[in-house]
Length: 145
Length: 59
Picture 1 (tube, rainbow over the protein chains, first blue to last red):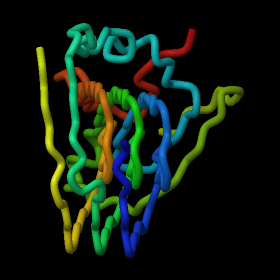
Picture 2: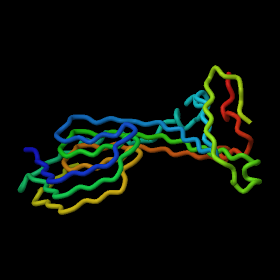
Picture 3: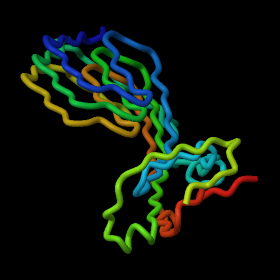
Picture 4: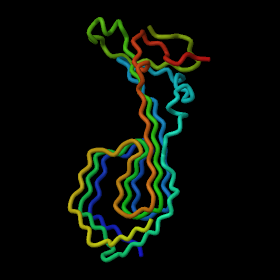
């Protein structure tokens, strides 16, 4: 016998970057995310500088123990109800899942590479530089200074 | 291995979460298996102090 989940109120403000809110049962949940986060002192987007194969973190194997052990698993449902009155979530991001209900298996993976690029000229000025936004497409040969 | 579980009453009043991120799960229910893996990398060479040039050169 399966357990039922009862939730009176569910409030989620933000669900972004491949995240899921599931109400009801499911069989298999499998999600993955690869993120290249570039932080610059000024908004500058080239649009071509992120081939994932350049960074080892996106190709290295993340060690997840395999499910090998055979377990004799017996559950007696004395009260087959999970009751939650209120759920309040501000944000869900990057391959996350929130489910009210049952599932058989969940497999999640995330790979994040963080990069910071600082301009020595701006550092000299103590960061007091008016913000600017520059977007450079792949075709363009012009580099902003 | 043998595992015997008796599920009795479970009743939660309030769950308050600021954020769920990077391959995480919040489940109100049952599951048989959960596998999660996360890798985060910010090596020394990822701090680049130079004028703004693309940090992955083209071609």
